[in-house]
Length: 308
Image (cartoon, rainbow, N blue to C red; front, side, top):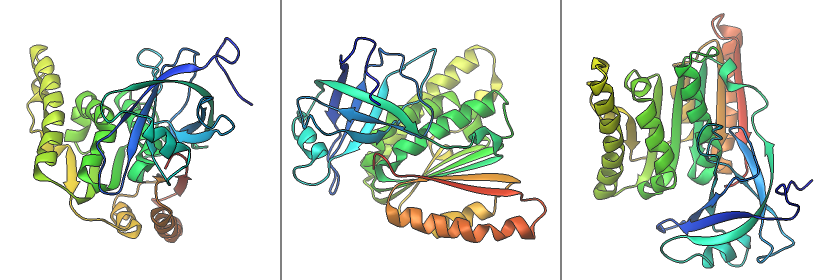
């Protein structure tokens, strides 16, 4: 059932902008003003509809932003333009090359999400390819907050994001900067690990990305030092975001994860069908560890398919 704003059939305001196009991707973001007390949980998706564009169609996209009752409630979507005349391509072509464009949009949801509370697990392995990061990144933010507040059983989180071009990091740079800035000590202690695998990269692009993240950390550290917190004297950049220039297979990522299995483990995967298949098969093979080791009681897998 459609869930419109409090005033029936009144659309929400949103802004859209293009990311810099790469060799194989035309991607844009949608920022929806949340004026209707729309709430959601990590991994959930919503349907969007534009009356002035293919009015009879609605399309699902994973929500990359986290709902914050005390802060920003805007809904951020990352969309890849596909085909030559489909909804996403037509919408992409209506957005200017630079700057934002304003649209009226209907939003319905949220739907989906992980049926299990992730804070009940001791280890979380987050695996995404391309725009599949939309469904995965909110779990990272939520997990960081859970560990910070010492809630649940969670001990550590590993993020593996596989992209074709390092420039794609622009899609989530604000969210990534937030995690690095807000949870620096968790990254320094390797409780949280962020790994980005890019098939292609440009040194200047990497330098700019790390410079952005470094400026965030420096600001955070300076504030901590002003409060007399000596633990802020740490190294930056490469210690917090690991950039690799090769494309790992799903089985390789699971093999690495096998070395860190705790009693209760969850794998959250979103992205290409090939990656999901590889990870699913490898996690299925891991189930034997539950019977072989008294220290491992559960290995749970959840995959997402929306908004890719």
